Image (cartoon, rainbow, N blue to C red):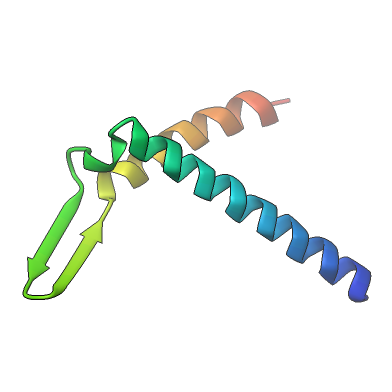
Length: 72
């Protein structure tokens, strides 16, 4: 694989990250950042946020979309 192939992979990864970022911004506007199952731990100045409920929702939607579009 030459530099051209590596450049295409990097551009593809950047596009995927851009789409994921825009999707996260849109989901937060619809209130999906506070789903049941999301865990938030606060202690002093540290906050740990584990979006388990959102990960499950994204997994279900992704599975459905992949089955619809990639089924032959």
